[in-house]
Length: 93
Image 1 (tube, rainbow, N blue to C red):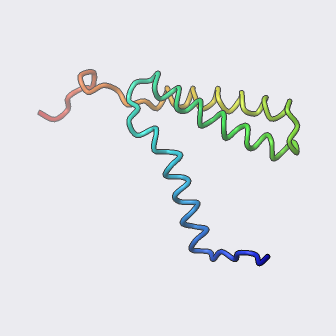
Image 2 (spheres, rainbow, N blue to C red; image 1 turned 120 degrees about the vertical axis):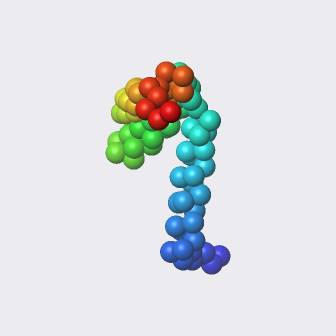
């Protein structure tokens, strides 16, 4: 069998498509609860992936890193939720 050689532009396109697909579910999230849930999922998956790579696939460190990532993602997601329009101060009339 022959190996498939992929150029740099194809790798960049795949990475860009993956990043866009991963961030797509967060575009419709406006409440802090929705943002916390989405951030927790993304943080948990990212933390578990990093934990698996760092520990060589051991279950304990992978789950611990996933839990830390989920908690951090949920906190950041809830903190960055946009405020409703009717609560903002009106500086321009």
